[in-house]
Amino acid sequence: MSRIVYVNGDYVPEEEAKISVFDRGFLMADAVYEVTSVLGGKLIDFPGHVARLARSLGELEMAAPVTDAELLAVHRELVARNGIVDGLVYLQVTRGNPGDRDFAFPDPATTPSGIVLFTQSKPGLADAPAAKTGWKVISIPDVRWGRRDIKTTQLLYPSMGKMMAKKAGVDDAWFTEDGFVTEGTSNNAYIVKGRRIITRALSNDILHGITRAAVLRFAKEAQMEVEERSFTLAEAQAADEAFVTSASAFVMPVVEIDGVALGSGKPGPVAVRLREIYLEESRKAAV
Ligand code: PMP
Image (tube, rainbow, N blue to C red):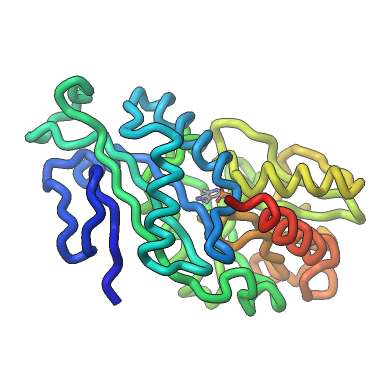
C-alpha cells in the first residue's frame, strides 16, 4: 500500500518522493536519524527523540531544518495520513544537496539541510512474540567509528552484524571492544545479577538510547538497583538474565549469548517486569 511521506516540506505519495543523487546523506552517510515508535496512534518518548536529534545535529554542525514544534506536527500528520495505530516514524536529516560531490561541508546558507520522514506500520508492535521467548545473540568485534553517540546513518556494519546473526541462526549481535560489551546492533545491552541491572555508562562508545534513559528511570523508581559500568562477555554469559532496549523492541529479553544459555534459558523476571512497566508508563506519557 502506498504511503504518504514527507520530503523537504511536502507530503507526497512515496512513489513521487525524490532525493538528489548529490544529497550528502546518499553519497557520504552525512545524515542523522531518529526512530520514534507509535502505540495506539501516539508517539512514544517523543521529547527524548527530538532532544537527541538536536544533539546529533549540534555535534555535526548541521542546521536543524525545522523547529521542534514543526517536527511534532509532521510526525502527527504522517501518523494520521497513513492511519498508523502501531508502528514507527523514521526521520532523517541530511546535510543536503550542494549540487556536486565534495568532502568539505557545504555552506548551510546556500545548502539547506534536507529532511525526510516516513512511517512503517507494525500492527501489534508491543506484543512481539519474541518478547515471550527472548532473543539469542552472538558477539562480534565492534569496528564502528568512535562517535557512536551521534545517531548517524552509517549503518553498514550494524547491518553486517545483523546478517552475521541471521546466518548464525540467532536474533542479533552484541558488539564487543577490548573484551567488554558495547551495545547491540541497534539497541543498548544490559545484564542482571540478582536484582541489580548493569549497563555500560554513557560515553562516545554507545548511542545514548532514549529507551535506555526511560527504562533506567523506571527501574530506579521501582527500587531496582542500577549500576552503569562496562561488563565483559564472560560476565554476561554468567549473568542471571540479560536484555536489550530500543525504541522499536522496547525491552527485549536476551536468553542466550554465543550459545550459552542465561539462567533458566527463558526471559528473566527483571526484563519481563521492566518491559511491562516501560510499555505502561510510556503509553501514559505518549503524545
Ligand atoms: N544503540 C544503537 C546502536 C542503536 O542503533 C539504537 C537504536 N537506534 C539504540 C542503541 C537504542 O536507542 P533508542 O532506545 O533511542 O532507540
